Each structure stands twice: as C-alpha cells, then as structure tokens.
Image (cartoon, rainbow, N blue to C red; front, side, top):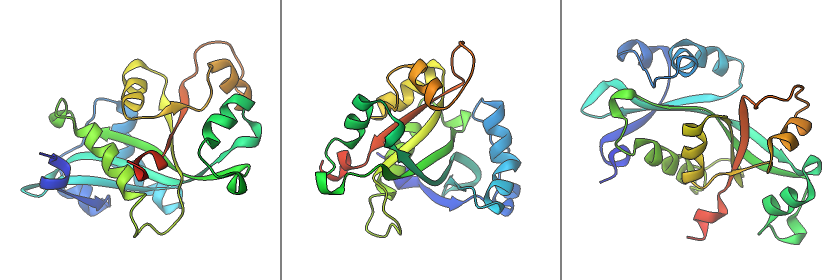
Length: 198
C-alpha cells in the first residue's frame, strides 16, 4: 500500500497549515527551522514553493514536506564525460548547453513517520508530478544540492540520482569553492525520462 497516495493529501505549506499542525521535526535543525518559518519568506521572494503531505484522517501533523524551484543544468561548464552522461538520450537536434530542471531545495520526513518508506514514496510522487500531463512547464531533470553526508547521499542514490560531478574536486572547481576539506553539499541529478519510458 502506498501511504502517501492512499492516505495523505498534498497541500501548499502556508502559515495557516503550519499553525494548525503540530511542530514538524525531521531530525535536522536547519530543515526543521526552514519548514517552520523560513519557507514563507522563500515563497514571498519567489524562490520556491513548499508543499506538505498531511494524513487525511489526522490533518494536524505534517507527514513530510519539500520545496521545489525552477532550475537549469548548464552543461557547457561540466567536464566532457559528465556533459555526455547528462545529455545521454537527448536527441542530437535537441542537445543544448542548458537543460530544464526542477530543484528540490528542501526535503524532510517527520520523525514519527520514519522507517515506513515515506521518503521513497515522496520522491516517487515528486517524479510523477513533474511528468504529469498537467505540469505547466518542461522539465527534463530533477536536481538536488544534497547534504554531503552518508544518509542523504544514500537516499538520493537509492532513488536513482547520480552525482553531477564524479569527484568533489571537479565540483569545487565548477562552483568556485575554495579550500580542500569535504564539500558541505553535492549536486545530484535524476533524468525524468527514466520513468517516462518505464
């Protein structure tokens, strides 16, 4: 049974929704603060929209939440091998230096709902949403700037995402990040054509 599809409803996160719900916690302080207050300023600045899934029978608790925004993959600055990998499957006549994408800016699952595969269901829902005939814009890729930690990276890898850059050194150079320690985040992408053809 798909919990999100069968028992939940996706809603735009608004101050009214937040006020009516118990405090959301996914175990990450930055994400918790974003979904509690910062999402609103983000939306007012037209930087992204935040959505939440609420259980229909218990609409006072946020099951999970995510933010999406328009984005692009600029391939002209990528290493040649990565440029070919990302453009794989794009007809030659349509190959360009810029591919349309959607950025998943924030994503979290309520701690009370963890270990129930909600994260995978949420990602499947996002993927399906952006290939739906009702989608208002072209979107070939999903991109994410994932925390460079084992759990988030494994989550995105298990859900079909790949690193935009094969090494942290390449990514550091592309993003003009100085220093030599581990990156705070890693850029990853998912080609939605994988599910269009499945």
